[in-house]
Structures are given as structure tokens and as C-alpha cells.
Length: 360
Ligand code: SF4
Image 1 (cartoon, helix red, strand yellow):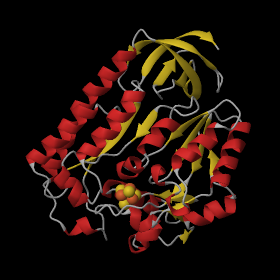
Image 2 (spheres, protein in one colour):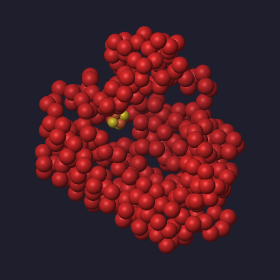
Image 3 (cartoon, helix red, strand yellow):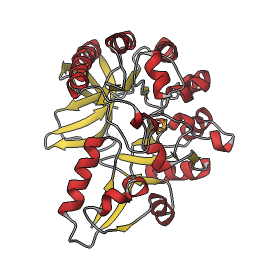
Image 4 (spheres, helix red, strand yellow):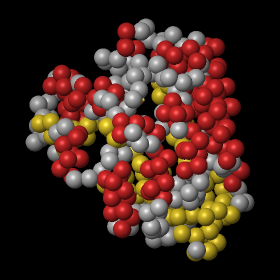
């Protein structure tokens, strides 16, 4: 049995340890981030053999792998250029190592030839791709867009500091119909003081500038984000600044994480806020985010849009994406890669319902 582990927050770590304990008597192999930084903890519940994540890529011979449905996943880089004070991933994955452009282009070609329609580019910070090679993401996106075939790229998480460096060419790269108008921009906080304590290397004004610049060019652009609530020392006023940033940017799809101390990180030395405060702030942020999702989805109701079938969730219905990466459920069985036009009829908050008009 192979268990792929994650240790990004304390709750995940606990879940992983429970799983490892459950299967401790099996012929167990463990990979992912946990053995890289918490071998001592793993040893308390089991004695597995370890597979280093890099070894998987070396043996698999490439950076691409098929995902669910018509999705292909390409890991463009490992590690990052950040020093975020709360982050254990940095300790596990280390400094940025970008995959060569040719390997990425090959992976995309192979996945498209084998029927993938949605190509997800992943990494801890996709916008940092190429910094260690003297290359940059907008050029890579341009080269991927030049690959013939029917597909679209969903760029993965991008650190706002890295996006800011390449803002104008990145916005230009998104003009290609082969790039979903989707940006995952983890803000983490709307307070400059908290961002400084997190060592995030940007301020709230930079986030606003990025969001406004993208939306000016692509008004329907879907921009999602991540926030940490209750970072050590976060005051009521600093949390209010986070709420303000969320309202100002109208991020669609927000991952909210209650701060949890990670061993070995600089922030672990700081005093935690009470759990009650962290929980309450998450709840308030989520309620604000839900209103924003509804407003964004409602804007689409009655509009006609292009759609492509990428995943199945249940018989008689198909998960499709529009050019803004809107999750459109069509209540028909459509083959993967099917493309057509649909009208959006209902908002269901985390997705919308569409009625198929015709195949294109
Ligand atoms: S950019 Fe920051 S949060 Fe992201 S992996 Fe690097 S150190 Fe961690």
C-alpha cells in the first residue's frame, strides 16, 4: 500500500497519522511531504518504507499525468521562492526547481493526444515558473497555446508577489482562447501588518492592483483566493481589513483555513490566538464569500456561453467548464471533450446549472 501524505495544516497532519496507524500492519510505502519533514512523527505510528516525491517523477519519466475525466495534470515546478513564516511546505519542498519548458510542452502534447481537454498546470507557485532558468510563465503559456489541438489550460496557484513581477505579459498571455480566464491568487490576509508578519512579500494594494488589472481586460475573469484566519496577533481591526479586501476584490471561490502552528516554522514561536476567535473569523469570512459567489453566478443567469465537458459526477449529468472556468452542470450525458453552447439557468452557489442549446 502506498500512502501519499500532506502536512500543510495541523488537521491534515492528524488525518494522515490516523490513516498511517490504520494501515501500520500492511506492506506500507509513504510518500508526499510528511516524510520529508516529520519522519519522527511517522515513526510513532508505523515503520514504512519511504518514497521521495522526486523519485516518482524520475521513474515516471515526465511531468504530466492523467487526472479525472478529460483532465491532464502537469507539474511545472517544485518548491518556491517564498519564505512565508507559517509554511511547512517550503521546508519539505525547498527552493524552486522549474521543469524544462520542453518537458512541459511534451507532457501537454501527450496528454492532449490521449484525450485530455483541460490541462491543469500545478506547482506551489506557478507564476514563479522559470525564475531559476531565466525564463518566465507568460512565454511558456504562449508556447503551450501554440500547440495544435482542442484543449484549454487551467493555470494553478500563483503567489501574488510572483504575479506582480510579470503582471502585464501575464495578462496578455491570458488573451489566448486556450487559457481559461481563471486565476488562483492566494491573498492570505488583507492587513499589511499581518502580511508582513507572514513574510508574504506584498501588500493588500498589490492584490487590488492585480485583480483590477485582470478584470479591466477580462470582465468575467474568475479569480479565486485563499485566506488564513487568526494568524498570531491578528487584531479585530486587521481581520476587518481582510473582510474589506474580500469585498473589494470579490474573489470567487475562497479557501479559508484557520491558522494552525506548523513545527519548524518561524511563526511556530508566536503565541496562538484562541480557537474560538479563529473559528468565528472563518465563519464571518465564509458568509461574506458565499454572498460573493451568489452575486458572481447570478450575473451569468440567462446568458449564453461556450461549454466543454470535462468530468462526470453522476449518471445523467456532466460537469462542463466555460471560458471563465465556471462550473456548469448540464443535466445530460455528454462525452468528455464535447463542446457546445449553453444558457445558464440556475445558481447553486458552488456551481451553476446550464441548458444545452447546441453542439459546436
Ligand atoms: S510561497 Fe509561501 S506559502 Fe507558498 S509554498 Fe512557498 S513559502 Fe509556502
